[in-house]
Image (cartoon, rainbow, N blue to C red):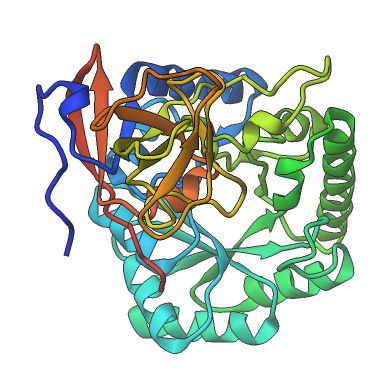
Length: 374
């Protein structure tokens, strides 16, 4: 059961109850537009990843700007998106288990649904579920292009799975999932580019082998916020799966551009609003945002409103702000904005986005797929 919204439309931003997830609506809109323009200029389809926002309202905004659909990682996320009016969803992951596959196949009665595979037995199980539901599913073979996680070896092994998909009733072979997740956070620009160059080479090799086998590879999909210019330039990828670009986070700020400058193509539109709950220790402020309010798996948040301040030592419900020497501006009850270290798991801790424009609450969007772990 979702919690009540921490704000009401028209409320001043500093009156929002905390912890709360704020979206700077103007920066968010610029991020949406910039990626949509990039994909259009590159002649590529955009299929943003909804694991970042888990919100059908945002997914529809992305599609209104030209996205062909969205990605999800879980069946529960896909169900929330379809219930929210999204009609084209790729589950860019392997789905295993009878109950999950039955839900996935049933969902295909209401939307175009795709799923990834890297195992022959899984293909048989998906086909069985589609047959029971009387629906059809798009299937992409995932190849390992360097992440070392899911995916079969590029080339012959992928062709064998594609043949099995093409021969199965209720399934349609659509192409290749070729996502290099760990490349998103390779800090050096040239090293990041080299990783994607190798991924594109492996995807190209597999597409050529599919062609020889008489199989059409409609899509080669992948790419993320940290690497999408390289996939776009490769001439191999047809579709981009970027997600974090809409919000950005503190971790992406550590990536470097070709000139060595900070990766700043997209703005930090997402903040966690915190309240100062203690100033008992000189030089420190304790806020009401700890592990239960922030995804700290890729590092601590940064403090947007206090130059030189550093967030540290989170516990379940507390975070400590070390203040710049001599800074005595912070008072009990003050509100501070924090830029999350990792936007995706941070979003998953909340029920609502609070949209802010000109210092006031202008939108409240439910995070419908929050906690959709199945």
